[in-house]
Length: 224
Image 1: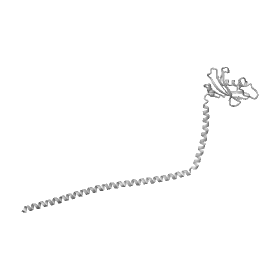
Image 2: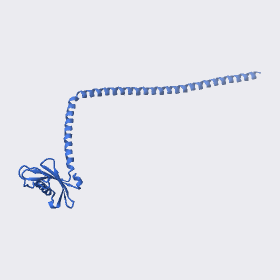
Image 3: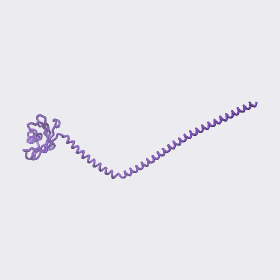
Image 4: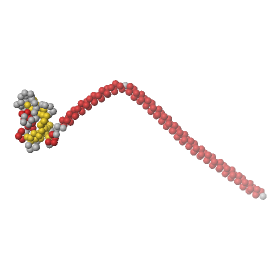
């Protein structure tokens, strides 16, 4: 009987010990879990704090940059206003330069137009050695376009002289007023048609008609 009681006591003691052990184990596990949770939570909190700090720092830097930019723009604006106030004398000088440039451009344009006009006469010849051909006419000269007159004959002679052709080897295709009573212009060709010239003449008192310009033409159509 006593053995049975002893065994029961031993079993109960074991059960109590197991319960206590299990409770202790549970408590330990719970503590471990709490510690782990705290560690994780602290890490997350620290990360969040770091991120917040970084964010705040960046915002502060952006605000500082904006302030610097605003100040720079204000300084630049002030500088521009100062320059604008100092510009009148410079602008006057620039206007003078612009006027001078415009005048120079106008002069250059006139010169270019003259050059272009001259470039159209690529086949034009002005020979300083040309002389008046002489004349038999006396008194006040009156230009005549009557083909039977002396003045006409002397004009034809001056045309042949400038063209370098013999009058007998030349056709007069046109002979008319050259822009004034004492100027004439004529178009002549060699009889074979290979040489075509438009020649300007000017009357020199007491000396006769003098060639002033000879233009070599390709066709008679160019004479129009």
